[in-house]
Image (tube, rainbow, N blue to C red):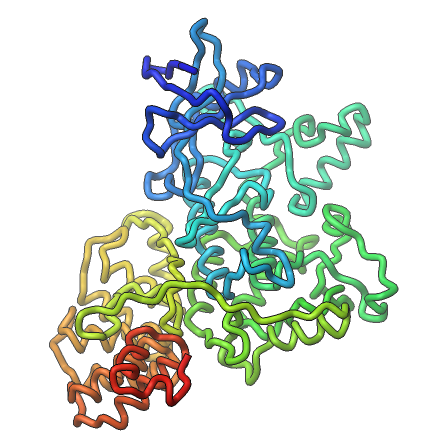
Length: 544
């Protein structure tokens, strides 16, 4: 099949669709290599409004560094008679859908660790922020419309449902659908008021309710639900029952009804219906506070007080740096403030409550590729603290030193937030959104490291070790590696093993080298395992 683009480009499509749905079918674009697909709408879905909406989106995409994670329209398609038929979009690399990760107990296919889930959450935040900056609102935050790649990138699908206003014409192109259980309370209230006044519109409330309907703030609400599910074994925050009721006899609301009734599971007097939901107190206070802002006081605060994608990103990055791996279940990571793994406890309680056993699943993953000297040399260290990267990577926010977002980041760093200070060090160290400045990177790593932030301590050690942004000082490198290693950070434990093994910055001590390699190897750090294997110590010590 041949179609023509807006500017005369010819597109050849396969005769058979890859997949078909209610709106249309997806076809492979044969002359686009393996990088493009096309959506051809069913005839009854074609309207002039849809054509104009997509035309605007083609001309006004978000920033380029997130387009690899969005099925954004590249061009419109017209048949030989000049009739609008659909659009061309990039073919995204997908290994599964977000909803599969929410399955509990987890399946082998969706065996993502908590660290993986945090990376996925930060990447969702990154894309949402960029789309909002471009003037668009997601509207329908259906988990079926969000897919995951093997690298932890997200893939946002069905973007033709996005909600936005063309300010040059004053036309608002509406999102007409929203998955049950993800609609913000103020949107549900507006729709309910309209249904009471216009019962005939009840089946098309999102399309017929007077504006405003979907906003950035309604996206913030849905984003917080997704983050809750990623951290809480796939369960919705609105699965609460009163504390006095037994789960076996409870009749909780579901979906939007639970949101309307504010059945937040950590609301005073409420508890989660499922024992699989760990207590809020096992998370850092910053994470708990964001959930409180998102859900607990939704009736009393203005929606713009909900956590933004950038706030979630910062908090999740900080949380990521505090995690240690569970010795019993390789998918479990938890804040080191907890004496035991709260997720193992949640599994046990779930089994007791439901009779369904939760078996540990061994995660298939790829190891960190060590540098030639064996040291952990990544200045923007987004690998897991056990040294086992699992190929998932957090994609940084694009910043401009003159824009408000950067100024906000800088202000938060100056107020003493260690996670923000570390992220600012990463930005300066790698030239992300700002001119590369290794001295400023060292400055901000030091600020965070002095507060005990393990990743920053390791990165600061690396800077001293290699003379990056500061005079080379191997003794100081050892000091900072030691501080991070003693907190359980595997990359620093490995680096300390290198130092003791080579006598770099410290008296050479093979026993201490083995000790620190062992610590890192027990958490799955590849280079440390290799060093122990070379010395014939890996099997004898049963290091995983």
